Amino acid sequence: MKVVKLGKHEIAISRIVLGDVSWIFEELGDNMQIASVECWEQLVFATILALKSFERGTNKAKTVKGEILLRLAGTLQIGEAIKKVGAKKGENFIVAFGQNARKTLEDFLKKNSLKEIPLVDCDVEKVKRLFEQAAIVEAL
Image (tube, rainbow, N blue to C red):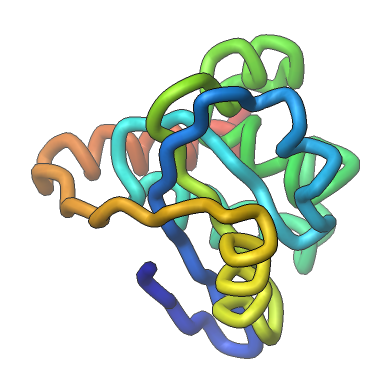
């Protein structure tokens, strides 16, 4: 698990493996999201952008969770975003955000008997490209 502090926000992220994804959406709180993406860094960045967009009132989605998916996918269509970066069988990243994000994520993992797998940093050039994709939603 990694934790990033951003002003009053705390963002905690973990990498997990799911055999079945059908149950997890009902369990996720409003301050959590799960995504099937290449790099943990892109999910943290998309979460930061989503939180900032709600603070500024420039969000495109109705919820922070939806905004995160839009930014990860680089689209304004939530259905397209879900298909592209939504949770899938296998490896996924799960993020919690808010004042007690670390505890929220730890409790969620424990309650649902989910085992973390190590987070591996992505190549810097790949991360830059993924950050640009997340940021493009501002211009759409």
